[in-house]
Length: 361
Image (cartoon, rainbow, N blue to C red; front, side):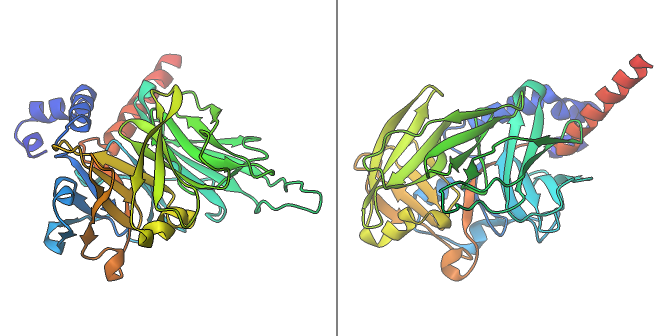
């Protein structure tokens, strides 16, 4: 980014969509995770490699970010961009690596209560979209086991066009159980539950803005807890049979084609309530480390755990100064640094719209 200040031609080249997207792909495939880290609820950043080797990360190893709004909460992250929103519904798309942000204006959403959120990337249009799914009232069941029929309105924001789309009549009869959708492979995913308590995955395709469903895998027991997450480039689930269990199964939706159980992780009984309680986390993430054993990091807020790749057993927990153990904030998810500029994407879209308007006139 310092090179952009040397020459105008360098700035143009580094800011070009081709350069930015090429840099993004190289960073995403870096097996040493030099651009990877964990972002915390208080919007601090810790690089990933030290976490595999240390039991405690000091405050000096945390990067303190400067968000555009201090009261905003985390909605989602993709390609180095973070979507933030506060309870007054002020929304920002922000890249902390390059300190650039775009404030979203003219939101049609009037209340953040009973709202589910999502943030994803539309690769076909090089666009970033934020979703706000608002339920007018909470779902409940009457004496005849009929689910209430709340008014559900979906608001979709496009960064490239800087515009909103309002959609009615979607998701009727389904209640999304996780507040934050999990983005992977062009889709934002939530776990949904119908009036019979049967779960499935509801997904939003960011390219054509259509909805789809995906059945859950067959678990060891019917009565189990599951959470949505990401392992590598695959949509994933982690499920625990009961609150006394000391193991959890990790499933991946392999190549977007079929569910397969990746492995079972073993942990101490003291951690069972963290693995079971669904209210503690909307999602989890796993990162593998290129070591002799292929160790992996499990991010399941408020825990950061390192597991031995060969035994699948817990090696150690990672404690971070200022994290939940010190009365601070939880880790949220894996974050990958990038040079994607939200203002550039917005400006490119505006110039295209102006060009089309001139031609039509």
